Image (cartoon, rainbow, N blue to C red; front, side):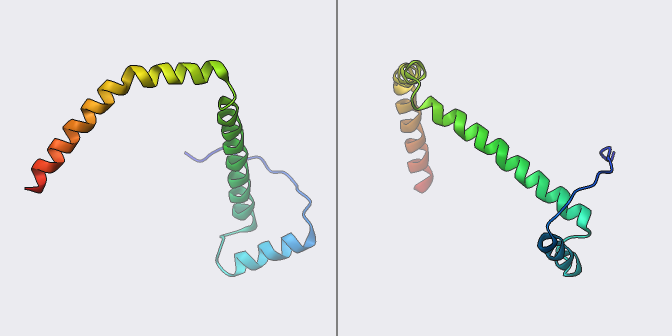
Length: 96
């Protein structure tokens, strides 16, 4: 099912429109419309990634989060070590 579309008007600098038309003629996009849609999707995805990155960056200074992560790491350290040893034994067994 195709997404609902809405017709709108945008004003573009002449050099961008010229470059877009060149890309369409070169077969790099099927139409101006497709080119604009793809560019908007990429830009919006980049904005979303930047927001996620900023949220994660904030975690580096969050003392409560860092303490909780440390506690969880310590709680799982033994299980992680045991899983590593099992994996090593299985890997060594396959090498024979």
